[in-house]
Length: 106
Length: 330
Image (cartoon, rainbow over all chains, first blue to last red; front, side, top):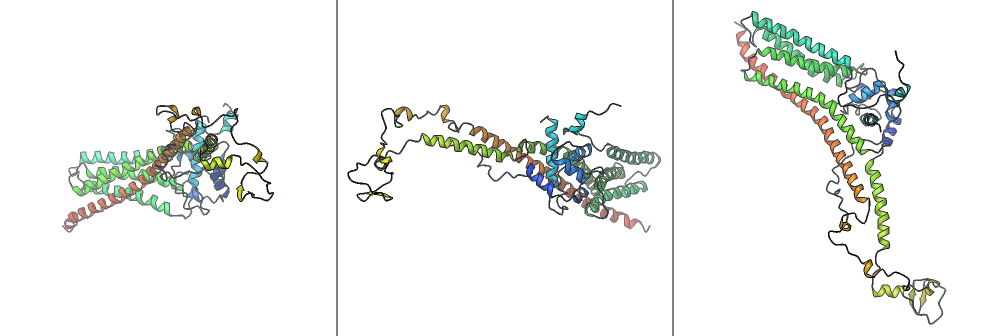
């Protein structure tokens, strides 16, 4: 009999981030209305939604997007104003993970 | 000036250091405003204490400090809160500026109310209100540090929970684990000894035929069903002398308790490693959840402290008004 130990904690773990296919799906659904950036207390004036969307999933990350990704503190203020119901915080988290991995040479 | 490396340009910004420093101009401006405000207030405090005999919270300078400090704190409290709720003519980055002003006004307000006390911490209401403001400002400063450090920790945990391609690692490991379990179960099933019952022997042993066999299905012979097709009925299912007998002793090996084979998952190589990996991802997700709680509930704690400080300040104002109002007619 395999003793996994998973049953003890079953149901206690919740997935709070999104996978890349989910992030890609949300990015494609984004209508570029800027509401998330307007509601963001971490965003500075030098960021635009189209550049952010373009660089989130893959490709090189520009200085302004990198600065914004580092400044984002996952407060979730961007979720409520989105008219499409997207999770910009989850997209930003993937951007953070990408930067983290690029720094480690992955 | 040297041209930028095209490889670096293609790669873009990389890395996510712990102590990143962004928005240098905003930080510098914030620092200058805070230092200038505290410097002016402090300079007046020094000058006033040297040139006046009435250096107390209820002196003219004390009132001035109290009024300025309260205005700063009210601006800190309401400017940012109202800006967050207002959607009129908002531009990107405006909330960030409001947040910077919130920090500036908060620290300046605390400094001016500290000057207002003139080192007099005896009246209970005022001291409690000041302690509340100190706690509020400290919670705000700590919150800003947490806002920088905790998302970096969350990113580290999410990195563990996602594969290199960004897929869910739990799902990937589960699929691999399932494949291992199915593969090994099939192998083990192949070695499972057949049940040694009379009925089983009857079903597998040859039935001596003494009459013609019907071609209808199911085959019946003397009202007894024959489950094996007629062509297989001529093949003996008894073990040949060259065939290995599964019931023999060396196939019935039972490992002792100290044997490696008694280790959980010994009969499913690779399964335990995958389960360990699964548990590691599970722990990473639990940590991620905890860090997200810190971000969320520290903000709630800060707001609660703000409300408490507001209540203490109102208490202090009512207390001060009760003392001061009767003296005004005179």
